[in-house]
Image (cartoon, rainbow, N blue to C red; front, side, top):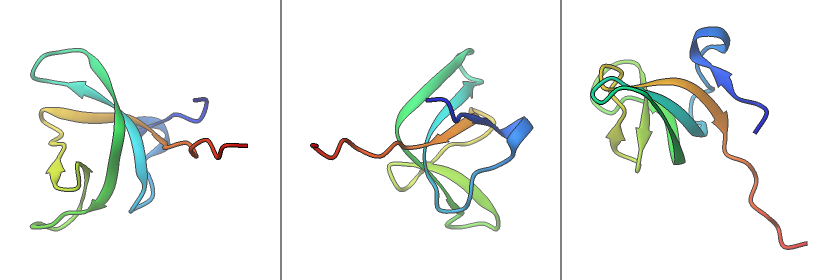
Length: 79
C-alpha cells in the first residue's frame, strides 16, 4: 500500500473511516500493524474521537498509539 499517512505529518483520518493502522505499542515496545478493520469514530461516552477495533474496543493512545493509517483497499471483485 502506497498511500500510508502518518498522524504527525498528515493528521487524523476522516471521521467514520475504516482503516488499517500502525500502532506504537507503549506497553511492549515496538510497532505493529493492525490489518483488521479499525474505525475512527466519535467516542461513545466522552467528547472527542477515537480509534475503535471490533466496533467497541477503543485503542487507548497511552497503550496503543496510532501513528499511521491507510484506508482498507477494495476487495477483489472476481473479474
